[in-house]
Length: 272
View 1: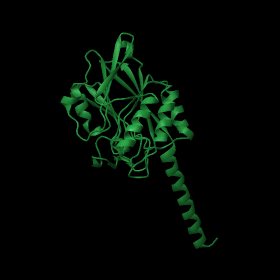
View 2: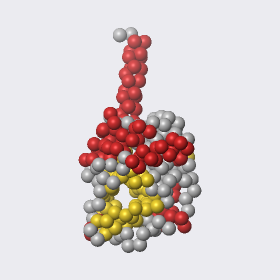
View 3: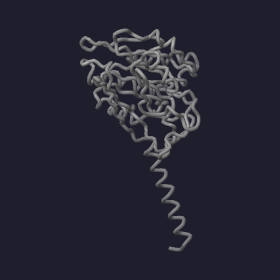
View 4: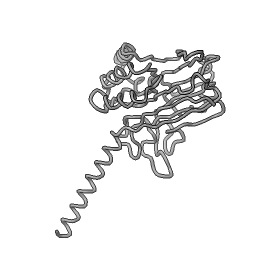
């Protein structure tokens, strides 16, 4: 084998390896499990499990989203929360969202808020998507809260449709006295405000895990936070509460995820 042939063969191997790596990084589901321990968790809520999905952007994981639905089902959640961008406004495919919610609803109650992409949909399509998701079992939260009772304890699940501007005063109106208060809101940059408003635990997405994650540095870029964002994944604790940020499942403006596999988040409440 001459030098030129060797170089071409090495280049081909490198290209194939890079393609295989990127295919894995963008399609291999990853489960991230957290325990949230706090005094606000009652003995009856100890073990209450929440599965969090975000930023699907019309992506399918298996036929009818079967791989994603199976992974969620294996967690045996008490509730499922979806923090927006089920549909991508640039390439709207509501059927993928319908398949997903239709498969999730028999597993556990599904609570959903819109993200910026749903809010960008043409008005008629937006109305149709909301109606269909509701008919499939999604509890669509738009400035309101619903309550789940576990024994003598209550869990209040509140949410807002996506808004670029968040106000603590508006959020405070959704706090339910005597309950463990959960908030679903698309944008993570308001994480400190969610705790300030009085929510025990909030769920957000939108940042796509920084899209590209570098060792020792973390996420590179996120909507609204730009380069090297502060809030792009994980659990962020504040006085009185915490926000869980999903790295999301699909892609939007940037078509590739690097060192940032599609993420399903599972949070188990534990008595402090």
